Image (cartoon, rainbow, N blue to C red; front, side, top):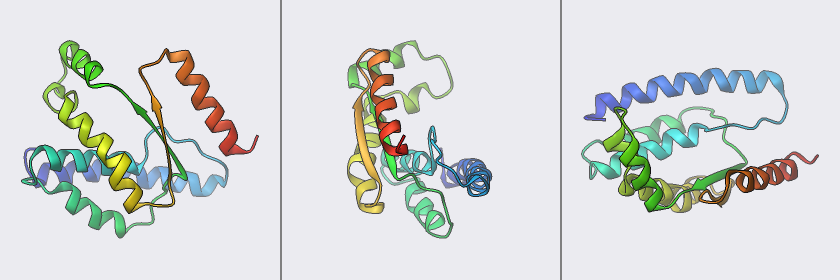
Length: 154
């Protein structure tokens, strides 16, 4: 975000999606596996605020809005961690509008810091499982499946 208005607009877009997802989850009353969650929004805001050295306080602003809502938070968060070298490689080949924002070492480090440090303080009940995503995709898939099966009790 270039300013706090951009950050708030992005928040509203994704938070509206989360509202819809929350409603569907609550109506279903079953085990749900999410690819991304409200944690993804919070992590993005944390990294964006870090990249702007606090000039765009979207994490600070976002924390207030997250506390006011009844969000669906996962019991377990699986974080797929990639190396700085892989970030550099993806940055080289990225042609989209987010090249300079998402795909750089600093953003990746801030995301990692959020999940490893900030999330555990903000949401101590969420179990964090970090997976080295530099391995072969079949190894990663197998590990994720094992985790999902163990968490679902099946």
